[in-house]
Image 1: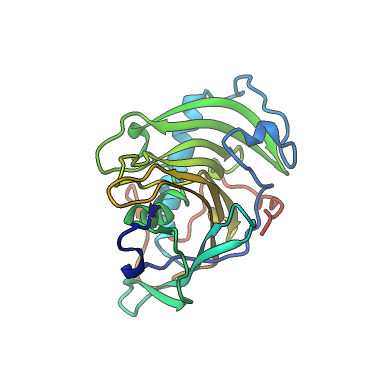
Image 2: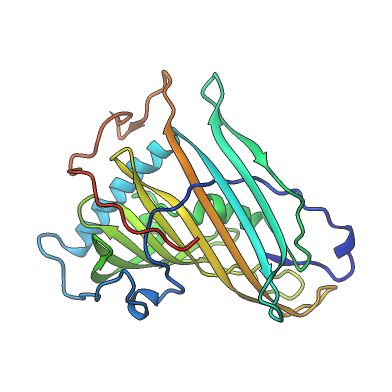
Length: 305
């Protein structure tokens, strides 16, 4: 998120890309990266003792492999995505600028993925403008997937086991090993379901922020909730990001603090039925369930709207 230039704020017109919506059915709200320990609502105590039956590394490899399968399968689903970005006045506590867009992610007759904007009211953001990094975060990091292919980029530490609503989860701390230029990463915590070995909750932020004066591009911490769809995979359904962003100013930009809140919803997931197949590691997984998949999981409680 970038501040508006004090010189050209009146002339800027945002050309914003679209995203997707679903009323979330997920966990109790998490305000920050330590919220699971601080807020007892929906969260049991964190048990730091080693897991039984599997080592932490085996769990990491198992859920990363499952995430790889899910990542391939998700490319074969249509869905609706909505995004709402609000700036909040510190004086009144009310919204003083807003961007919204609702987009349907579909396929054409040739099976090619397409995006169709179905709702886009006038943008009224005045204190900030969305950057390309914001849109990439919405597409790639807010609905975070940690695949086998991603593992070499991350340091992952086992923190313990925790009950979240009705789910038994493993909790891991995750962050990039090296910050490569022009690349963004997730840094925070992930909760992995002990039965399905798939991510069901994440809490953290995208890193790194660009803090150079006149080039600042900042983002708040966020929480993403997942819901089981089709009795197979845990899909992202709701993300909330909120925080105070401090822009130091310089080079034509004002120094300011901006209270920002972003809500992204993903809904109406439907598998696209065509002649194409989903192949992973040489195996057709189009309609297959994972070997470890058992009965349908209980659904956690909904986060606040």
